[in-house]
Amino acid sequence: MVWGSLYFYYFPYWKPLLTFAISMQCFVIIGSLFIPESPVALYENGRYQEARNVYSKIAQRNNTRNYEIDYKFDKELKEK
Image 1: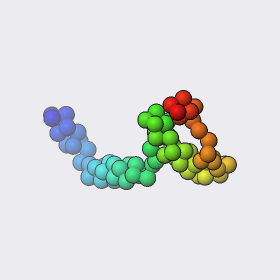
Image 2: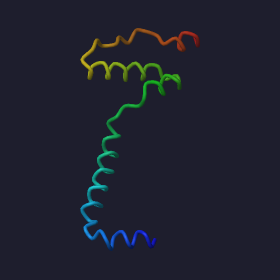
Image 3: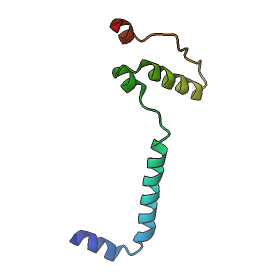
Image 4: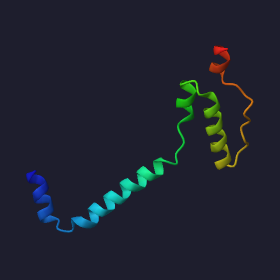
């Protein structure tokens, strides 16, 4: 508590710093809403179709070949 008081005493221009920190946190929170879930986590939880869809979106963004939906994961084949 004392160190914080001394910091703001010697650094009087703390409002721009606080505004910058809050704006960066808002940017990260809003940006995280648009990041898809990890395909590895989806695969491990048995959500294979969703993992394929995420891989397809990643391939489209990277301008590579589009992954077809008809392939099967090795873990998926073992379960059936």
